[in-house]
Length: 285
Image 1 (cartoon, rainbow, N blue to C red):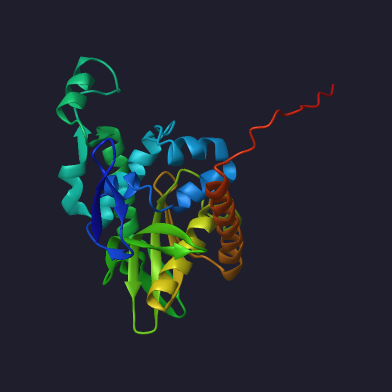
Image 2 (cartoon, helix red, strand yellow):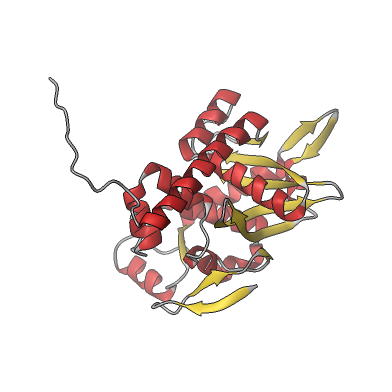
């Protein structure tokens, strides 16, 4: 499913249309022939930064963070435990990310995502919480973990929307005879005890854009309507919430991603990703 096209850094950078299994995160994120939901959101929020990252291929500022690394670790524990040793290393000697012990650990595990022992304990707690969580569907009680069974984990899909090559990567996807579902795990430190709090988290991170893009691309590819479920895990408050993206949420995300694709198409045609004119700024006491 991969064309062996290399850039200056000798990375495989072009993906083919359709579903791909066992595609590494490095290859998926290195690709610049297709745009992801993260790229579309960045284009809407900060077109100048978008050009630097997705056009000029400059390093993304703040690309990695403790929260992102923790989330990736939890994802791997739940969805791809066989990749833990290959992709992650847990530091058990240093208590902070500095000093001789940390430098030694970092050097010995170059290329891996580095996790502190304190993060590992919280991650194990989050996974245990997830495994025990239940949800009521209709009149039946189900384990939340059952939504991540009998499907495919970390499956990638490439296609076209509005004439633009687009890529998505599902945490988990299940496909049945006439329909399917995309199930996404989100670790968060924000409160998720109510519908209003969950809506706030979704708006903060633009989850509606990702949900709509994923649903539309996979429905186009398979001919089957897919639902989108978020599995929010907050180990701090000991809360797990399984939430379905509403039609209203998907429509809001659809409007945004289509606007981003329209802007991207125009920018590629003109070479202008943002207004480079001189701005006049008002000043008021």
